[in-house]
Image 1 (cartoon, rainbow, N blue to C red):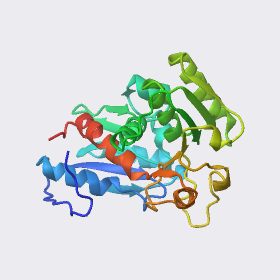
Image 2 (image 1 turned 90 degrees about the vertical axis):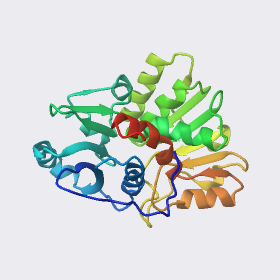
Image 3 (image 1 turned 60 degrees about the vertical axis):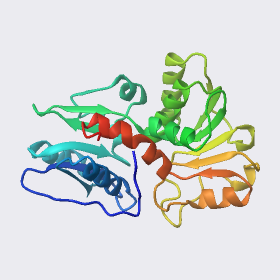
Length: 274
């Protein structure tokens, strides 16, 4: 699937155009609308992807409003709505059930909302595309929310050797560990001290780094030269963590690679694959 991120999306919007919304709070960091509009234009699909921002406090009435739109074709939830959207879909994939969140929802002709989770698939596809084979590797994953859970499941699915999951919310950590152990008993998984140097790959799956005054999710001094450090954040394109990791001699992978990695699966899910 060819895509040049510097090319503008060619849109021809009419009264018959079906609408996909990317929902989140904040929303300014979202890159998927540009990507998916470009891919839709390539496939000649009469659809448009638009960003829509609402907070967790306005979640219920916003979702009720979305249910009322008859030209709504799908929803792409991002921070912080992925876990909560799991409770409002009419059905979802087994993968989404294991993760406990959805990041893609297809609206069927009869109005049913069908959910799935492609964050982890996108992350793994991004690794492989860039020559980083995850099989038999060890990963430290910082963040056990929707993105962190999805990454953990996808990595377990491709046969990583070891996972360590850390988060300030221990309940989320235990849920991820329980789900991985139940579905992938051969994968070693635990939580514990943040000791990045012990792992082949360090993955930030938290929002830390989106705001200029954010604390770093881990201390760069704990990294070791040569290891891979990845981020799921889209904006800034290269987060402060990745800047400092690269200065330390680490290999880095930006968050946009995960978005590209899930695009094919998501477009196919929406029935828009060219």
